[in-house]
Length: 87
Image 1 (cartoon, rainbow, N blue to C red):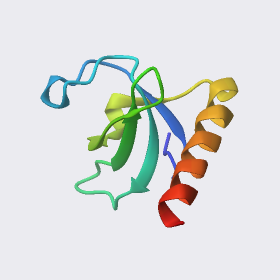
Image 2: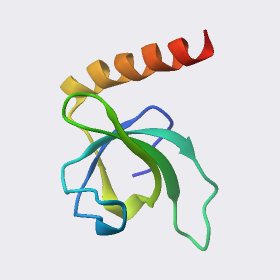
Image 3: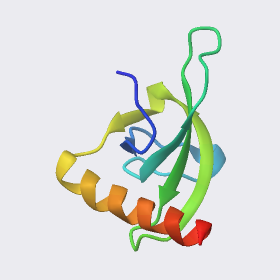
C-alpha cells in the first residue's frame, strides 16, 4: 500500500538507528520517488505528548497506516503546526 503526504503511520518494528520504537506514530511529510523498487518516505515522528521526536526518511516496509480515528486528530494537529510555521 502506498502512502500519501499527511497520512498517519505507525512504525511496525524498532528502528534503533534513529532511536524509534515499534508503535511510534508519525505523519508522512514527503513522498520520494521510488529507488530500485523501494519507496522511501520522510516522516515526522511524535512523542506521546505530541512533541516532535524527529523527521526521518524510512522505507515503506517499516510503516503501516494508523487507525483512522486517531488520524484526523493528528492530521489537524500537523496542519495547525504548519500554519504556525508559515505565519
